[in-house]
Amino acid sequence: MNSPHTFLWIAFFAVGAAIVNGIGIWVIYKNRKWAEKATTYFMCFAAGVLITTPLILAFPQATAKSSYAGYATLVGFLFMFFSNKLIKYKTKQKELAFGITAAEGIGIHSFIDGVIYSVTFTVSILTGFIAGTGLVVHEFAEGVITFSVLLKGGFSEKKAVLYALLIASLTTPLGAFIAYPFINRLNDSILGLALGFVVGVLVYISASHLLPEAQTNQKKHSTLTFLSGVALALFIAFSKIL
Image 1 (spheres, helix red, strand yellow):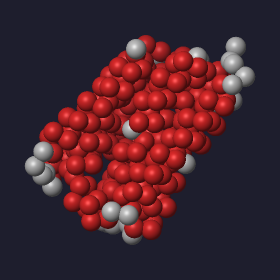
Image 2 (cartoon, one colour):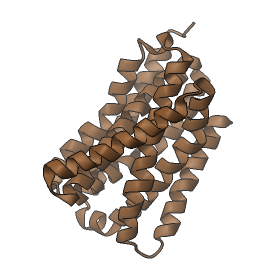
Image 3 (cartoon, helix red, strand yellow):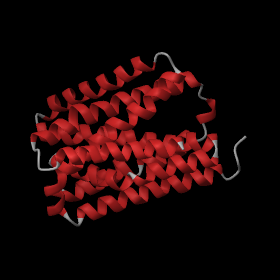
Image 4 (cartoon, rainbow, N blue to C red):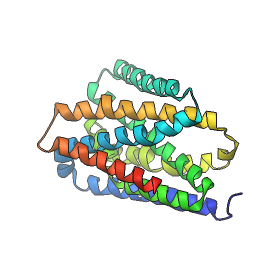
């Protein structure tokens, strides 16, 4: 049975994540020139985080819960692949398609972050606190990354700020508050399929979208930046395990 303080812990971490994310967006908004120079590094860093975390954390958990999780991963990957194709067809603008597709994946990722808060704190306050701390740490970088990819997609500064807040910041508490009342009603098989789908989404965004785009505009130390993203993801993973 959940502690009466469980929802308060969930709300604290979910809203805190949104605030930290918003701070990242505000900082990059006030330093546009720096953002333009560093966009490649942000994308490399994001790719490192987003390709490592689902592979070493979410996918093993998904397959443990459902033997069909691999199929859900494929569906998630194909969903993003064809979403990108559709956006390119509708917009006829490669840069705009890049920004929208990256934002789509980040939005799903942020929403799932909120769901994770509800899941982990429902398991136990200690589990939620450890997992939540790791997630909040990466929110600043995620806010910066979201704003950067929207700029790369051709959005104006003000629209990039607005959309980044909606996509990356507000979706986290939204995911937490929507998931909390229903999380105990989901069986392991459904949770496994949902996790598998998210793995496919994040692998597409990192390996087939952010990283190739970053490599097109590769700069000195881009590889090191990518590996630093991998290292951060490993740190988050180990902080959850300990």
